[in-house]
Image (spheres, one colour):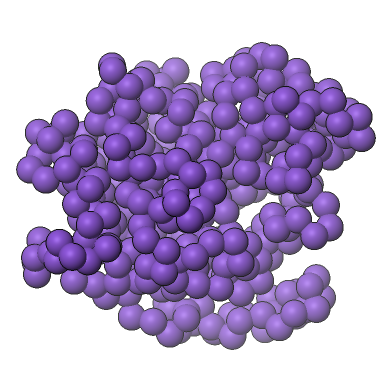
Length: 391
């Protein structure tokens, strides 16, 4: 297997644009790639583009009727005739060319999965991907095609027998869980804000998979307000043990940046530094359990200047084997690009100035009266025995 990493990038992915005022501003993708280049990370890996996902690939996850509906809405976004498919809603408005650019993003994630499975590269990143809410027959939560689920499905089609998917977006990875609910070849793990307080109101610890795949779905529902220490503690208390038990051949991860304390759409209080620490942990777990095979995707993230570009540039650096030191100054030319595009001042450093430290769940014991520890215990009790593990 080559040690060189791969970054999937096509400028056309910035056409995934729901219009002025929508939280998912495609400038976040352009600014991320600009920061990757300004930091020189593009010289540490291979930057390439995969073709658009064709209908046969999309149908690995999505219903043919739904793909046809996306095509119709893409051709005539003003018609507003595809509401039954979640298209034309406030969250997921239709726009011209929607099918083509959504299929392009899906193609990058599928291409990343293919490259890793073939052994062309150990790691592949598509930060434009991670659109984890799209369902087999419906758009949802800003997501048209579920590129994350398609990447997993392609790995299975190529012969993978065990694929683990870990989602650290603030929102539950509901679309991926749904796609593989009853498939014992796939383990989905999602750490997210509690469904009582955030869309999509799913991801309860009791959601553990279908009859043929009990324990195949894992959900850690974190209390609103959870910060670095709790978020890292929950990750450490659940993810490593389950991956060790499952023994994945490939690790697919989703790195939504919307857990951040500046994100306007959610209620966790996680720093950039903790997000970086989890990306490093997942990189290490890929090497520990999956022979280094790692497909890393983007996801949500709506602090499009201060947070998203830095978080995903850290992800790219980790995958490339050239992690960016947290106190690194952001390049002046990148800050100029930020101001030119947004009329905002860009952040000065690649850190929030936090120390990503936590008390391990097994090291110091747990407090049954603490809401964070209650969330961890609920997940462990629901799922761990199904994997032969003590809760």
